[in-house]
Length: 289
Image 1 (tube, rainbow, N blue to C red):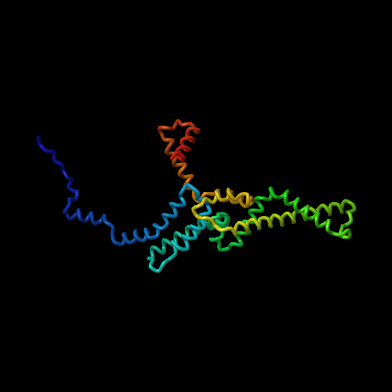
Image 2: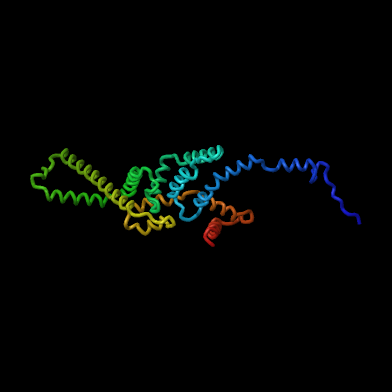
C-alpha cells in the first residue's frame, strides 16, 4: 500500500528558508509599537476600575458621577513630569471628551444636586457650596409648593391675627368704602399672603437643608436611598427631592444589558413567544441567582 504524500505549494515558505524568516519578522511588533501600547495601557488601565464600578447594577446613582469625574480629571488624568507626548495627548483628549459630555449647565446642576443629596458625599466635592444650596432650595420650594401652601397660609394667617390682637385700637384701619376700597383691600391681602407664604417656604427649605448638611456623612458602602427611607420623617421635603434625583442611574449599561438579555432569550427558535411570556423569562433571567 502506497503512503499518501502531501504536496507543498511552491510559493509556501518553509521553516529555515529566507522567505519564512522575512515573513515572520514582518509579523512581529516593532519596538516603537510596543512602546506605544505600553503608553496606552498606562493611561487606560486605571480607568478600567472606574468604568467597571459605574457599570454595576446595584446602588449606582447619578450622585457618584461628581466624585468620580473630579478624581479622574484632577488625579488619574493629571499630567506628570515623566509622561511621554503620547500619554499627555491621550490624557488631554479624554479630559476634553469628558468635559464636552458634561458641559451642559442643566446636566451639571443635576449632577451637583445629586451629589449634595447623597449622604455619603454632601458638600465634600462642591467648589461653590452656597450656589448649590440656593439651587437646591429653589428645587425644594418648587417641589413642595402645592403640599405646603395650605399649611403655610394658615400659619401666616394665625401669625397675622396675633399681631393684630396685640396692636392698639388706634392702629386698626377704617373699613373700606365703595368697590374701589374693597378691591384695594383684597389685592393688598393677596399680595401679603403670597409674600408671607414665599418667605415661610424659603425659611423652611433653608432650615431643612442646613440641618441635613450639618449631619456627618455616612460610610461610602451604605445605600443612600435606604438612608433617605429611614430619615424621611426628619427631612420630609428634602427626602422627596432626593428620591426624585437619586433614582437617575449613573450609566445606561443596565438598560442595555436588559435589551441584550431579551435578544438572547427571543431567538429564531423562540420567535413565537408571547409578550407576557417573554417578560417573565427576562424577569427570571435577571433575578434568579
